[in-house]
Image (cartoon, rainbow, N blue to C red; front, side, top):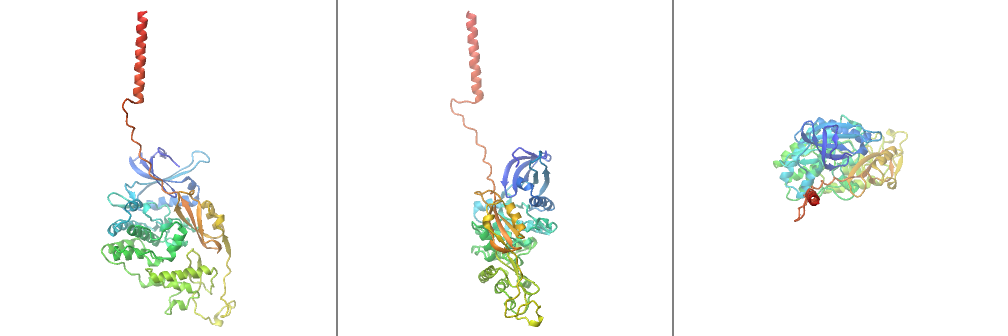
Length: 503
């Protein structure tokens, strides 16, 4: 990694380290050509040889360059410097607008929690920045307080599009590589599903909850457990002094099912405006309640047509989770987890999601099925339904925990498993070391395995230079001492001269 005083491609002089993140370092730098201060983000050397991470970094440059909005940090330049000697490291960097402010995370550490008015004032700007990104087909995927910079004048800037996803560039996400910060990941990302604007809305809601309550909706030392709770539980209620329209907005943005949330940044801007004027968010339309059903909607109750009972429990969950939904989701957890092989009837048309990210399917068909309509291979009605042959592989945590995340990712994908990466800041273990996996044991091919790995926490700001030591009475500088020595030498010379004259 570079050091203070280094100059990137003869133009950007690195002055001081601002922060260290999971992918690189951010430096305060001086643009020698335009004579202005900028922020230079340098990719860590261990990633410059990794095509996946390097592609992601280039993606940040391309996507950010297309965004122009008052609430998005401006990208000025991008560069790659080939190693000066064989075996050296390639240097890859971005040059961005230097935001004179502090991250929202620092504000929350200092103040604990914010008033509803200030929360909406700050996060309304975040919603506006996300609206611009979503309109350009970009999903940020790592919205969190550390990536939201607050200037002294109150303007908020969204930074770090390094793991952003674009519909125009699916190559970064084809491997099922899911990156983000554990406490702010949307449930569907934990399950290895596609990133949509709704994941940014969920992260926005998590930040809003943290501002209003002084704590995250789900937190704990074990990120895998936190992720599982996010899929299966609803957050504790916000403080009673939070106005109802604000509370309802935050609850809606934190809906477990993305179909129940505010859909994107533009709609979020409108919802924030409504909450600030005291209006509750618009209820979801009728399609929202049925969009998540794992069966084709029909007049009869959903439970009458589902071959697996627990699936129906989550199928009827309303948009805003409540106590009844929590009980239903717990039932859903117990059912599919016990059954690793679910009967698959003819013409698979639906899926049931398990907390660990496993996706199993079952078809909605009337029961019983007339024997004449069944295929020749269908078992009699009184026997078990036909089963699909499933190949299992073993995920042994002893073989992966403690290993580099890149190695673990390659080994798991080699087993035809999908990998969802969750980064956790840890100072007590080496960066990129795998901490946990879920699920473990015998799992079907195609299962999403959540791999939690460590990243280095942000570096503390450099200490201020020590003031010069005070001079004590009778002491002087080195120059003064050298001057006194010279005076003594002159006096000695004069004395020797007088002695010679006397002779």
